[in-house]
Image (cartoon, rainbow, N blue to C red; front, top):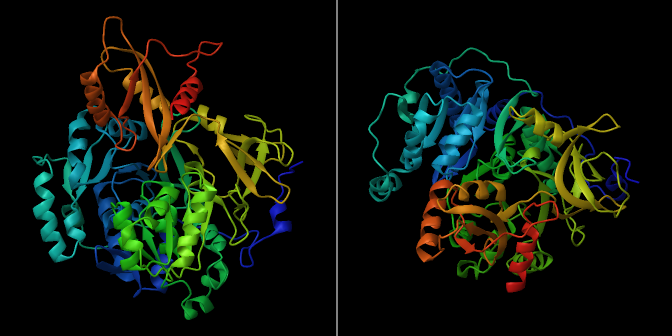
Length: 585
C-alpha cells in the first residue's frame, strides 16, 4: 500500500536534489530584491533588444510600489492584471506584492463578458492592462466595481526605433478612448511620487500574493489563492530538480555561490504567459529569484519561436509539447546549433512518447545535450510538482515528486489509498499547494481534504497511478476539461454561453482532435422547434463566440442535432458524442 511516503527517494533521487529544503520566510518581492542586491549589474530581463539590469529593475519596482501605495492600494486587496509578457506586467506583479496586495492575473485575450465576470468575482477596484485591449474594460466598467484603470503603453518599453514602428503600425488599430478620469496612463502613475520611499508593509510567507483563475472542480472559474511561500517554494524546487546546475540551491544562495557567480548568466525564453502559473513561475519568478535573465516574449508563432531560439540562444526552454514538435519542423531550425540549451521542459498537456522521441532525436542531431523532460502540475499547485528525472524517465510516467511534495493515489473523492499500480485520483500534499479558492468555501472543501495522516491533500480530479518505485503516471482527467494548445477549456462554460444564443434549446461541448492544438472545441446544438440550422447561423455562432469567449476557447465547429444523448439519470451523455466523433475520424 502507498503509505504517503516517498518511495522514489529509496529508488532514485537526483544527486543535487535534496529530499527537503528550507524556503524563504518573506515574499516573492523579497527573494527577487535579494537577487537584485547580489547581482545589480546583471541583466534581469530583455524585451525586444532592450535590456534592463537588476539594479534598474528593482528600482522600477520600488518606485511603482510607492506610486501604487499613494494611489491607495491596500494590503490584501486584489489588483486585477490583464497583460501579456511585457516589462510592465513583471514590474506590476512584484510592486503589487510589495504593497501587500494580491496580483490577480488573467488572460489578455479574455472576452468582455469574461473580464466583467472575473472583475466582479475578485472584487477588484483597480485594474491594470495595456493599450491594445483597454477598450474592453471601458465597455464593462459600469457593470463592475472598477474604480481605477491603469493603462500601459508597450511602446514605452521598446527601443526607440521599434517604438516608432509600433506607433505607426499598431496604434492606428487601437480603438481611441476619450480619457475619463478613472483611467490613469502608466507614465502618469509613475509621476504620482518622486521618491521610492513608502511605509514598510510586512508581507509574510503565508500571505496570499497571487490569484490565478482555474476551473476548480466544477469547471466554473475559481480564483486560486497562492501564497508567497508557495511561489518561492516552487522556484526552489524547479531549480533543485533541473539537474543541470553545477550546485545545490543552498550553494547557489550562499556567499560562496555569489562569488562563483553560479546561475547568474543563465537565461530563459519566457514565452509561456505570465498570467498562467506555468509561465509566471518557470519563465519569470524562478529565474529572477536566482539572478537569471528572462527574455520576454509577448506573442509568438512556432516559426518566430524557432527564430528566437536561434537568435537569443537561451539556456532553458519551457512550453507545451506541440510547441516543440512544431519548432523542429520549422525551416529556420534546419541548420540550428542548439548547444546553448541546457534544459527543455514540457507541461500543460500530455507528452506523447513519439513526440519526445522525435524532439530528442532532433536535439541530438543539432548539438544539444538536453532531452525533453515532462512535468505535471495544476494552477492549484502554481506549476509542476513532479518531473521526469534526467535520463531516468519511464515511458508513460510524468516523473517523480518535487522535494517536500507527497503524492497519494486514492479512491476518487475519498482518502482511501490504493495499492501501487492501481488507478485512482491523484492527491498532492506539499508547500506549493494553494491556500484555497477565493470566497468559495464549498469548493475549497471539495478540493482540499485532511486525511488520516493529518496532512491537507489537494484532490486534483485527475486519474493516475504510482508504481512501486514512486514514479507517477497520469491517465486522464476525471473532471471534464478540453486541453487546447496547453490551455484548459471547461465545456460547462462554453455550454452556458451558447445556451444564451437565440434559438438554442440546449447544447454539449466536447473536444475533438486537432493536428496543431491537440484538441479544439466542437458544440452539438439542439434548436427550438421551427428553427433551421444553416450556414448563416453557424457564422453568427462563430461571431457570438468570439465576443463571449477567450480567443483560445471560442468554438468554430458546430453541429445541429435533433436531441442530445442522455445517461440513465438524464444527464447529457457527452462521452457518446465523443465516441461518435472519434468514429468519424
